[in-house]
Length: 175
Ligand code: CUA
Image (cartoon, rainbow, N blue to C red; front, top):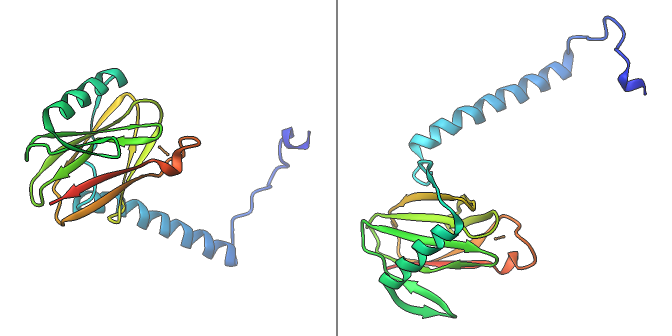
């Protein structure tokens, strides 16, 4: 019960010596990290603009189904492969435990990639570029994306989402 008692008067002693140095160092580093956030927001090329809209999971799935029907060019392991029009919208739907469809994009073209989840929170992590975004049900998060290199990029889920989490792997192909 002692923690409920009021501390004795004059309990506070200003930090001094090494303690003061370490608190100062920690404070400086906090300030550096805080300033890096706006810096990388404007300077970095892998940041989201934070463009997001409210959407119901069912509404998002309906848009994804329509998108797949209009742009499908193939299939890999039962997952549709789509080739969206450059400059246009593309969709990636996260669910336990898959990413769909597989996007086939063209290098140097810009796309608006819509991300959302059908069930719970997933983590979109594009490898090996290490671009990371949260994928939330109820939110349509739009990434304006211009692929700068060709190849096959893997989407891994980096937000624990249940028993199949480690198998939740998707793909983006850039040609
Ligand atoms: Cu989805 Cu982990």
